[in-house]
Length: 268
Image (cartoon, rainbow, N blue to C red; front, side, top):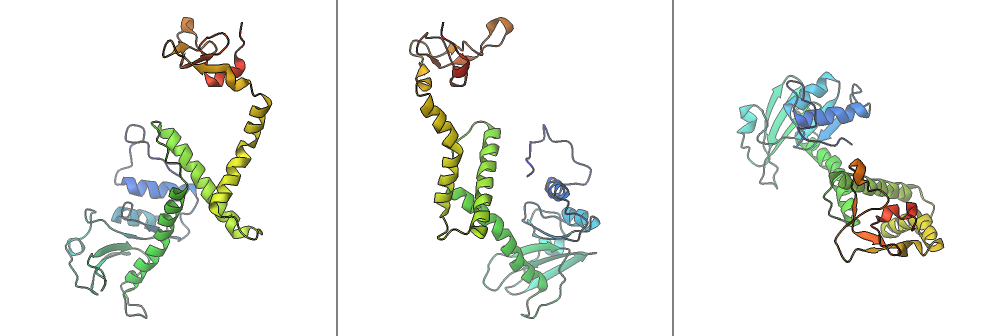
């Protein structure tokens, strides 16, 4: 996973390297997948001639769809092929094409360093068959996002790091269910909802047992009624310039107190 931090925090890219190219190269480098002639599929957000050239230098193939606003030869950018027809252009080992399928109104632009302009056994260009393979691979990404959305809490957060952490939790949970589904000996196999439910119950078991052993601890705090906030008696220190305000107070001594500071607080 590579998180984009924005121009303010991201280092300046090397000359001639696009942002999409930089992301793909970083991910492949971190997974040690370059220089092994693997075949990478990318969608039109990342695909470009710049990425194709950069990956070829590092002995890696690329196939992906191209956006209209990407730099490309005019014969591909301005191409308007009839249904079932294909327009090709080649720059060294990089093949570009624009084709329109019989059942599609919208033309598709592709770039590939793996496929050629030859025709397959079904009389379709190989790169058109590559588009079918591309859909199969990219469909896995879309399916993964769709499966995550089913049981996502969709909780709104103002902190970006919280969104990232929750996304990682959901991703880990989905991957763990896939592994469970493929290797479990349970019969019948648990539905995903029951699997998620059991994981949550397992993670909260210790916390719930501790809460039952100390039932009075939760009753130690209450909401502030007279004022909106009070200085926390545990973590706030005005003398040293560290002021921490709390919207809750101790139910016994009525001093400001955060929920996380209850254990460290002693009423006097």
